[in-house]
Length: 274
Image (cartoon, rainbow, N blue to C red; front, side, top):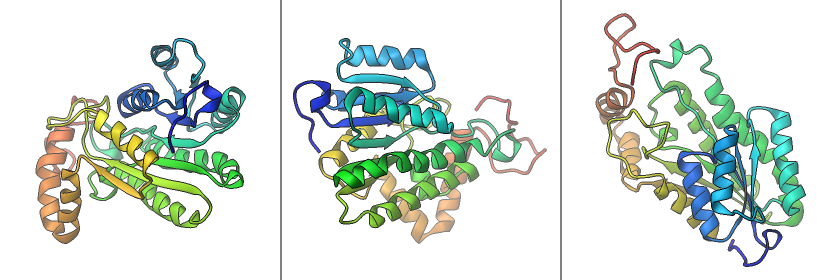
């Protein structure tokens, strides 16, 4: 789907969640450069409004809507605002995501928030936009997954991303012939607030933003970025024992700052730095 020139109402309209930072912010910049009309959603109102002004000082083709994607009323308000401003939603990008950044998930006071943000919210957002897309016979849902949805690394985060991958691939098949496309973009480690403490070599979030723009122009079912992570997923599928070693020594130790030892044997607690 290509963006047209002209006013905001003459362009394909994108609703982008988690837009205020990281992958979302980079994707907003990438799609604005391609000429899409954008409805930016995130909880941080100040950062979101500043981004919208940066991308389009006139306000004609970029709209900021403070949104809590875990709240049903907030999701409905987001969709209504997009319709009020632009009259339609052509593309939904479910990018909002969280993880448990410190310690083990079982020590976190609310680990299920990861499922609410990363899995339940994309499902509910998709339910809100599908009727108009199916009625129109066109549209595109892009879910931002993770390589952790193919290589299990952290209980709740991987559970959410495995689930999102299954949802995306199945939804694509359910919608075959409807004119509505579904794509999954699965990043490995990229620089963002979520990975700020990871002692790993990482590209910037722009690599993911370019992949998103790519699937909008040429729809594909699943894209893994950076490409090296395709090899990691293949190795884990063929030799899971090797995957155990890589996850323990590289991902857990360097991402979370501790090794997989039992509770009380020197691991970093949930309140300690990554």
